[in-house]
Image 1 (cartoon, helix red, strand yellow):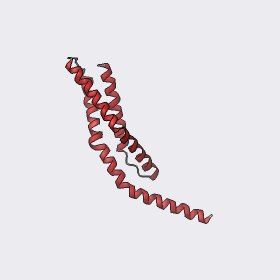
Image 2 (cartoon, helix red, strand yellow):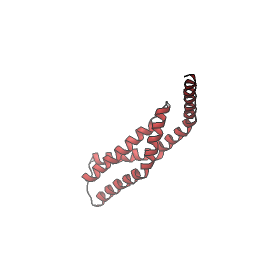
Image 3 (tube, helix red, strand yellow):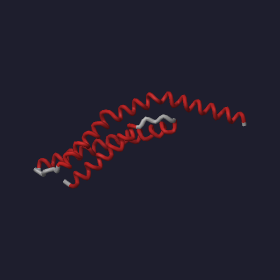
Image 4 (spheres, helix red, strand yellow):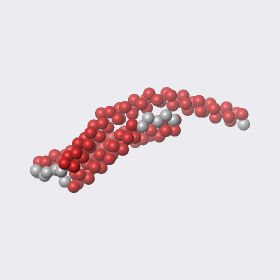
Length: 125
């Protein structure tokens, strides 16, 4: 039960941190680039995160089969992990991907403008 509790807390944290990063909506070019970097890292970890969630679910199913009673805190933590995990899979990743695609053109334009400004300053020197 203790192992399942700790594993559940770790998986919850992983989903919670990823969801918070994906909720950001950067406005500047530098922040946008960092956001895309984080998004790509999270996407690489997505399958492993979902597998970890399944491991926790299996642990609690096994505990239930052996008639091990879970505390209210354990049940609540498992429900919260489910909520964060489902939110991550069902919404956060898709919304972040849509935001990145939506803002990409705007950020390329901003980069082009900055590049042109630097070139003009360089010519003036």
